[in-house]
Image (cartoon, rainbow, N blue to C red; front, side, top):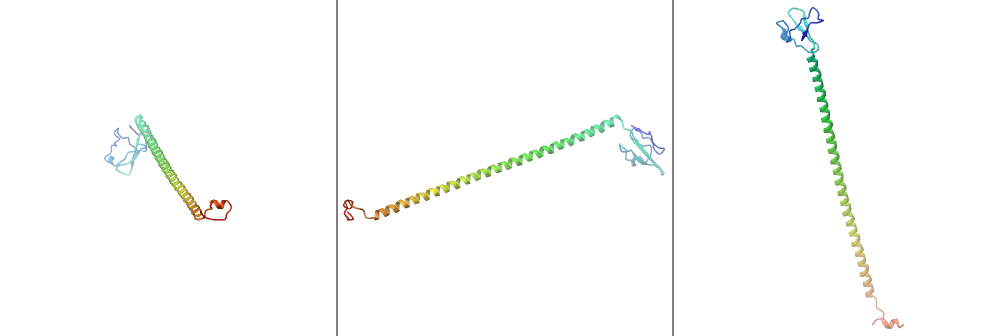
Length: 157
């Protein structure tokens, strides 16, 4: 509905379709809130004022509600996406850390086994060398005969 309430003598009432009774009406852009200044023939202008009907308030409220709902949905989607990304990043980091720890443990075990094997080989080699040296020394020394044990100073068999 259009109304001419409170308008000055320069204002005019538009019809129910929002049209003004002037030939140059196609120049005017009518807005919901402020109406518009409408040029007419001569030096005067006409102000068109739109009076809000209940359906306009209903449309305004439903539009505002729809905008709020859309904004809330967008915020919720953004929060969900951020949470999913953070969870994925944390899971990937944890998996990488676990894999690195497992690899480090495997490497340490391998190094320890190699060191133990080296130690065992060195000990065995040392024991073998000592046994061989002792045997060589023992075998190269002249043995005492039975007579030597009885007090004689005779060496050999």
